[in-house]
Image 1 (tube, rainbow, N blue to C red):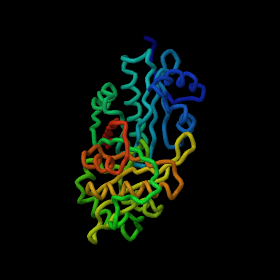
Image 2 (cartoon, rainbow, N blue to C red):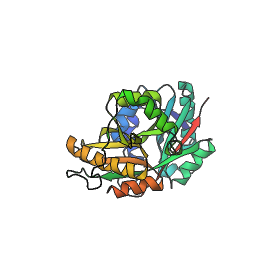
Image 3 (cartoon, helix red, strand yellow):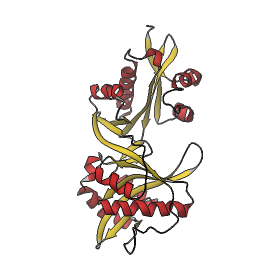
Image 4 (spheres, rainbow, N blue to C red):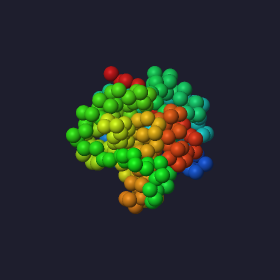
Length: 295
């Protein structure tokens, strides 16, 4: 086994990295889409593991803000697995995050990725949530489920305190780690995040019986193919309220001319049922999120 070293990635590493990432999954890998962004990200660190100067592993640290580090893209050449390279890359990311001054590090993986989960748990990371991706087509016709029930509407900054109180009393919020998923990256749902999303018109609320009864945090996102979809990164409420919001956002996607609605929803039966009732579909994959305090 050649000596293994961890260093910053270089442009000339691309070909070797793409070669060992080519068959990560049946459909390939997303690394070729993000390589240039990761390599040139001033708010991140792209690391490679080398054996005899040949890249055999990859990992990326994305510093989301001063406090939160997101660990992603951990890959090891299949010919060099079972030699602790993944664990060394993971530890290197944690060290980089500490050096940056991050107070917390997070990552996610599929629930069945036991070898990676073992690495994460050995580094004292703990699971804080799990989610299931759902997707639906835009809905151009009125939903029969809505009837005379009030529809969700965009919230404003005037609603901030009420939304914070609602989340403070939510049973769902702590079970999700209090996280908003922007695609496959999780952010703390802080006061500042809520304020930014309210200013952007990306918080929808459902009021019933003169009180807040459901909430969704969302945004428009663009896929690698260039198409845009509406993405729900956090949703909360009763089963019925969540179903009503999910239906309404399908109509919202149609009104915006978007291709679909996607959602990373908490892996809770009541929320799964709500989305199934709103005619969303899922492949059934479960993703788990881990975190570790760094201070």
